[in-house]
Length: 386
Image (cartoon, rainbow, N blue to C red; front, side, top):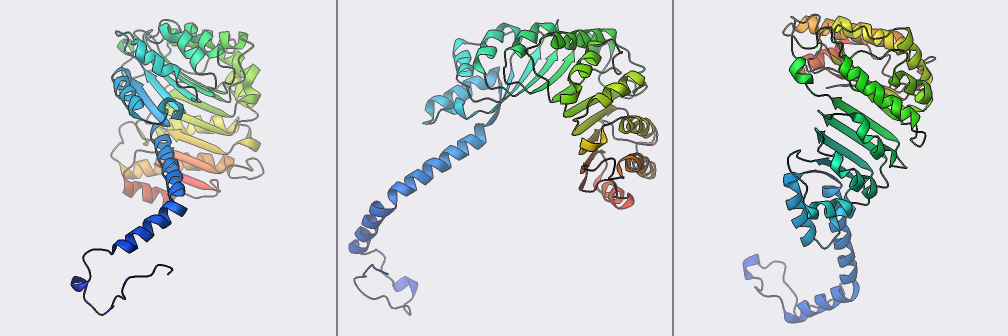
């Protein structure tokens, strides 16, 4: 309104009849106004937008050997320090290739990482233990996925080097495992009792208990493709010692295993701060899932439990031969739901329970039918069916 146009514009004139070029006086006035009042603000907004965009893109990143060159090139061209943007990093290194010095320098610049995931194949990561332990002082969550690593005890110094560590996830597949036990399928994991996996992981947890500088981890994952450990195992001793501090428990079971005995039930009851529990069932038998859930919920600490996550790579059916029988699948899911509903439907025993998550593998039609088929008294907040 303050700008004075050199001549009035008749609104009735057609667009084609309007001047094709803005008067210089108007252009100069606009430029003066912008440079005087808004240019600095625009520059600050642009910088903030650029910073936020880069942080969103590079905050969570996976770096394999072939990715380092590209990321190094991007980091060298950016006006921002990209390594400082990274809060969650996954490192996967080839077992047959040494990491170049430039790539090691790039890792050492990542000082703001809070979540570190190591994908180890054989002993590929062990040679970089000193670099990793000195580079990530603020690690809160450590995930180690170890395939064919000779000894999990070798990574204990790395775990002990993180003073702020609160969450630990360990997945270990030993040498020769898949040659003796194929990838989960119809005939996989029959009555599996792998002493190699049990002994290795039990020894690992026994070492953790002896390392007094390691805190009580809020998340514990028991990832072995085996049943629960015995009463004198390292994992049992770990839960006895750290159980009251465990807030999230992830259990993996396979079909045919006796899941909970007296020892295991007492260990579950030690987890008096448990907020959520995730059960991964390598089974497609709905009856076994119902049994597992019933035994487990009966031994959970109800006052703090807020969520149950249940998933299976197969989906659940009434039997292993009923994959295509939609009615059988619905009936089985109803049994699963009712097993949960009867136990956690009472708000007196489970006052904060809010979420039940079931990964079914069903098609959308069956999912919608399933939602309308089941009561909702137990999931007082949320039912998610994936």
